[in-house]
Image (tube, rainbow, N blue to C red; front, side, top):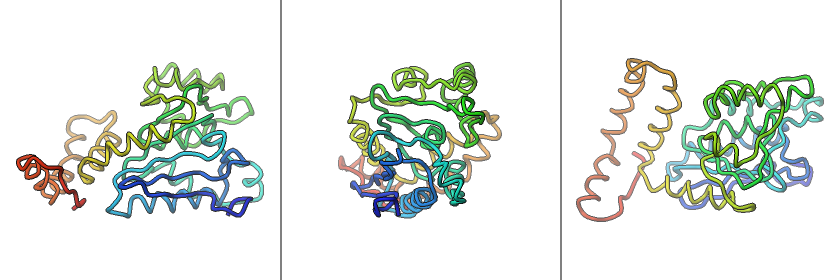
Amino acid sequence: MSENSEPAVLTERRGRVLLITLNRPDAMNAINGALSSGLVAAVEELDGDPGLTAGVLTGAGRGFCSGMDLKAFSRGEDIGPMMTFIRHGSAKPLIGAIEGFALAGGLELALACDLLVAAKGVKLGIPEAGVGLFAAGGGLLRLPSRVGYGKAMEMALTADPITAEEAFDYGLVARITEKGDAVAGAIELAERIAKNAPLAVAASKRLIQATQGATDDEFYEIQNPLMGQVFGSNDAAEGPRAFAEKRAPEWTGS
């Protein structure tokens, strides 16, 4: 539980979309043990429910996440589940909806999402070098592929943040919204994704994630097993049938 006795992470179903909210607004959603375990439980709910196709991750209050809760860390609280999530992400598409800021471990948490929707003026950065540390939660691995080598190096070495508008220009942010509208924009994007077949969506995500920098042979080695799973599914038969019958498909995720 968080300091106000509410859960550190909240979930809410929106049709085939699960809205996940980091709920430590008084601590700027800093990562402690409760938030770490709560987020992993929410992602397990998303991935384990065949009625859900995509998720949206956001933060309550002024911003998305300010990174590690150093007081909780000094008390020895276990954030191992969070680090596992940051490394492996979710099986289903997860969209980060960012207001205010995503800094340090907060940006690294956002980078574990597949797509980012950010409000105008949001600050995104890895300021660790300014306090004698470095971004050890995957930011130095993922940023170069999201913003390019030069900008990633600049962000890491100067510790200066960039705005949502700059991040959009570099490709880190997929969509920009007005302030206060990031969740609505992310839900809209997630609902668009959820109109598609769940197995096909999950396989597409996995292929793009797993094959960055792969050779042709490596790509097809990963793709071939997925083809059997997706092309032989009930949904693969339902899609063409619904198209021929001029109706919306009824996906089962099987």
